[in-house]
Image 1 (cartoon, one colour):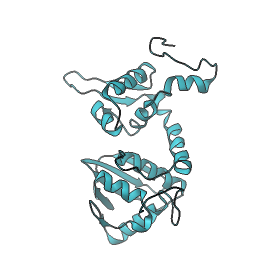
Image 2: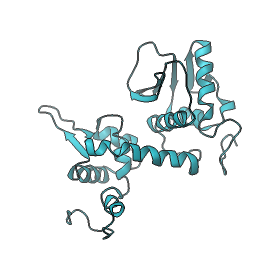
Image 3: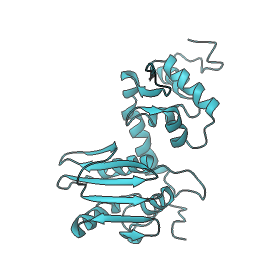
Image 4: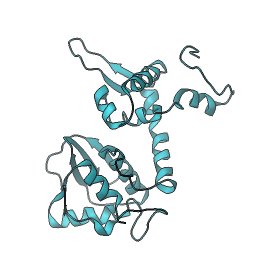
Length: 233
């Protein structure tokens, strides 16, 4: 144990307690979450982790490096460092997915006014919901462009995937602001239209309708609302 780094531990000989000694600090698991889909720069992480201070992010990255969960790729002549998950960090992905699934079932609520939202987090939750709902289509690729970032939510005939970046000839393209995408995905499915303020959905008419029908299970499912929800109020 690095006692210089860890000022407090559970002090239990229990693997869960020892794991929380490593991962239980505030922001730590969220740093890991934001490296799941590939390497990121410090500034990228600061953006997706809206609210974290540079000092805290530096501390969490150093701690995760120390534990062998995150690696920093430093190249000669390149100022920016890119952080990525190690194999040990990749082992946490199923754990994070199960935590997100628990949240979908038990802690879901609409975003509060002014609360930071990020498209990758919303789309990851949508992917998990589609998997759990058993949503199956012919292979599709839905391109989502938000605030200079692109993500592709796709189905290959067997599984749903989420990747960063562009794709050629997407079936549907969603272009939106962060706020508009969050409202679109967390609001009632009946209110989702292909053209809204600050959001457009383009593609073949049938392809757009298929997407809207398929994502109707998210977040609450047709005809359902989370207790305490004020969406659309």
